[in-house]
Image (cartoon, rainbow over all chains, first blue to last red; front, side, top):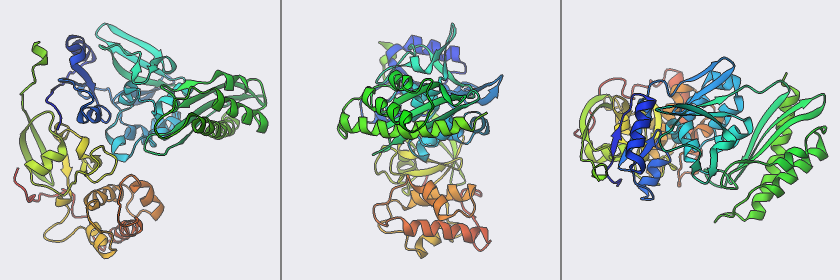
Length: 287
Length: 183
């Protein structure tokens, strides 16, 4: 049985922000509830006040405008996976939405809730860091943009201030000659290890690469050593294998109750090889 | 501190359950599963894992499968909720229910209400799915008895018969039907 709480229904971001400022640690932002209610049911957290941001108009919109795909923060994973705009302009972002949790979680869970909860095994987080997405944070006084890579500060910790609301995730279509891929391995519903890669191939060589390792450490992070191993090289056999091996060796890995660090590094290398192969293949056909 | 006082406020919500309008006063913390089972007497949805992994508590809210164990009853305000009790019509089982019986897709029965509602959501999007489509859609709804093959067969068969017009999808709260429980 959940302990008692009150639900607030702000109509605007400013109203929600003022509520959060006034209630402080007594309040939590409530959207899909797929993470928050689990914590509260287990008695691991209690908030006497939930601020339901789904009552703010337009926060669930998914639209492509001025060259940017904007995912409203309370758009559900299901809405993203089935959105024609998302499928067209950021197919990998739509596909990874279809892999989150299970179909019931995807029907309730929101992209904003997933990112703000900062659970280390988030699929969208790893992909959005690799994609270099922008998160829009708003409060009563105005808004600011934070790159996805700068948003995740630690396990369950983000750059969001207590009175800020994540309002949208902005995703730009990949530049010409760029491909993206995400591979994961899951023993349970949440992945054990995951790698996202975004690679630009120009004149047969790697012009830019972002390799992000997710789920094995506290936050999804780029592995610069793996990216350096690709830069300027022809993305073929030994080059890709070497970069994947480096990704496994240099990733920030934490042991957990199911898997050793050694095994996770092995998984990261395998997944990096698959992700790089698929990203390069996609890059060669993306013009 | 004033804001720490446990709030006692009750919310009035109106919703439709199995085609029938329901008005109720709820506490914000009340879970949809408890509301359906304890307040309306609709015990078809089961509490099992209680962490939205197994699917035994699945009900349809506006035609979409949700885990009632982790959904606030508050979220059902203004919406249509369908439970297994709302599928039979005029004393006749829904084609999916018939197919589950004919294919022996029910063993202990604990997962069956969630299985059937999850399958119904698929059949309304993909009228006659292939076994591969059924597997992809149903993979997150767990059964510890059957080994799944009979469930997959039942869903494929029900879809085929519904599309062929042999068995109409009459259920689903499309028309008014009285639930067994009292609101």
